[in-house]
Length: 133
Figure 1: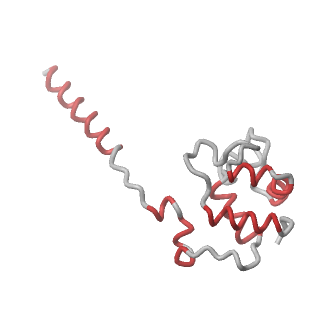
Figure 2: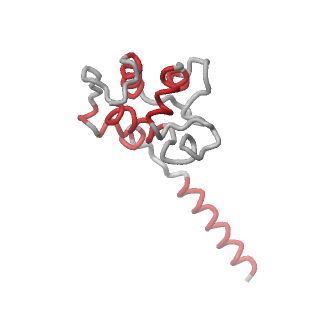
């Protein structure tokens, strides 16, 4: 009977490992911006904080979780315009998302920067003076 439980345990373990290894990168899951406007990144329009920048912060910078909200230990609150504007105007935001070495690389623990479209939108917003629009 003991061998039966060992075999069941071994099979369960192998099945668990096999299922955990069956992850297929889905480009649309890795880059949800591709679902919007047929994947076209339009930076010819006015980039607005409320429509363009805030959703990037919420989705990529942890403002919706514990990374960069009012209660986070990072001390940087990206859930508000004031918090985003402050680090945008002092250069920390741009350094963090472009990984230029002048700030911690963000998103932290990621193997990749936020995508080029998001970077272009944030750059245009910063260049416009980081308005609250």
